[in-house]
Structure formats: C-alpha cells, structure tokens
Length: 356
Image 1: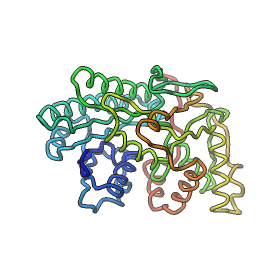
Image 2: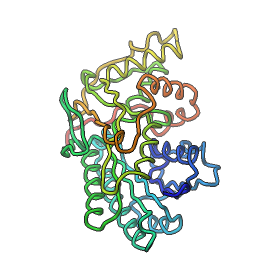
Image 3: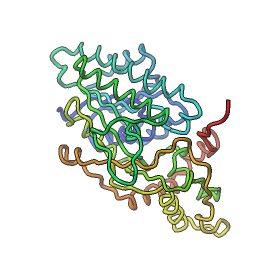
Image 4: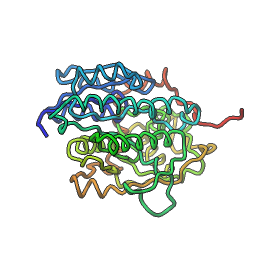
C-alpha cells in the first residue's frame, strides 16, 4: 500500500480509538479523520496531542446516522476504515442493553452499507480499500483453567455487550462473503493504558487507591484476563488494517494472564511506591470483595500466534512495564481524569441486576 493513506477511525475519541489515531499521526505519514459521537466515554482531550496536526480532522457524528456517515465517506474518501465505535462496558450493558444493540449492531450495519456504496463507486481503485472491524475476545465466551481462544474458536457470547459485538462480527463477515467487501477483523484481549475511562478495572483501582477510597473486587477476585497494553494494540491494529488478508481475522493478545485480585494488589503496591500517603496507609487495606457481576466469565486468554507468525507483530510491553507506565500516567495527568471523576463517572457500582 501507499506510504500515505487516508484512515477513517470510528470511535476515535475513545480509549483504543484515540490510541490508534495518535499512533497514526505521531508515527506514520498517514491522514486521519476521527468520527465520534462523543458519548460519555468519548473525550476530545484524548486527541489533544494530535489535534493541531494538519493531517488530522474530526467529525462529530453518530455511526447510526446514515446520512452523516455517507457524507463523511464521500468528503474524506478513506482508503481504510478502522471501526472501533462501540458501547463497550459489560456492566453498562447489564444496566441497559438498548444502546449496545443500537450502536454495536445497527451502527455497524450502517457503516458496512455506506462502505459498500463507497467501495463500489471507486471503480478500478476498489482494490486499495479496506474495512477493518475491531472486536473483543468476549465473543468467544468463557474458558476454564486451560486452553486459549483461537481465531476459529466458536462464538459463545454471554453478556449483552459480547452478544452485540458477536452480532457485529457476523455482519462484517456476511458483507465480505455476500458482497465481496474487503474486510479484516480482529479480536483483542483486555486493554489498559493511558486515557482509559475510569469505569474499567485498572483505572478505577488506580484512582480509588490514589484517593484512599474503597477498592471493590467482584466475587473472589480469581477471574482471569489476558492484558494488552493499548499502544501495543494500536500498532497491531494498523498493521492488520494495512497487511492483513481480506476476509481473515486476527487475535491480538498480550500473553499476560492475571487474576483480577493479583492486578489489584499489583496496582496497590505501585501506588504505595509512587505516591505514598501516611494518612491512607497501605492501599491493599482498601480492597473489599463485593457481589460478583451477573454471568461473570471466569477466564479469557488469547492465542496471538497467528498475527505474530503472519504479520510479525509482538507486544513490546510486559504487564509489569505497561502497568507501571499506566500508573505513572494517571499520577501525572490529573487534569485529564479529575473532570471525569467529578462529572461523567464518579466511580459508582454498575451492572447489578435488580428485580422488575
């Protein structure tokens, strides 16, 4: 592909999407247009490091709005669409599934139809277009103590969130097989790193530990996740978008399986080391176990061998190095997270099933 391409990044003001946009502007010669609705988790501050670059542009729009999506396709004329726009928090999908169905399923359909129309209009240039759909390992369900998710693992989603992402995955594959749309897919393990909205485990624990607030751990804390540093993931996604084989999917993981309780205790130790506070004392004293999330999957673990063998990608960060960088970032960037904690999300418990 050309040295200079045009990337349309949906959900590019979110956590992973903004990491992709920053990587593209800071480390390549490509042009980037971010399309984002700016819901509670979309934050223009995530894009501040690249906002003034002439190769960057921003469009505030809803991916369910076909008129807006078609207009952006026609005006920006992307070579590659990287589709990251999604409702993504399992707990919120338990509280209210409707936005997950609308954004993750209907929104993906709208983007695919707009992509198909635009791709067909390219004529002889159709071969340079690619639609990259970014998904999650949660579509595969839950693992016991052994085994890894492969690209060929059967789909067994168990939450409204994962079911909506599984539906979107199936739509993308259908548009490839039925209409010939050149697509690639990727499914990732749990991401962590800078600019992570504090409803998720790692940033929530960092901020509660820093402020001396109780640190909730679901169930017995023994649920296991594979952790992937977000900047490693961004590199993988751009590589897949440019070099992945049309119609194929690629699992992206960090080879970092950790139980939730071990992650929480590790963060507490780092905060004690980097920001000791005699009034708070050892942060692990703040840990308390709470009623588990309904239908909480026991273990996720990704086999990232395919992307390593075929595309040459490997994660740079270990979990220890990535977690230290992440904690340091939150300590140094209060101006990013303090407005969120005082407004959009103060750390309240989400995802509890209540009676009718």
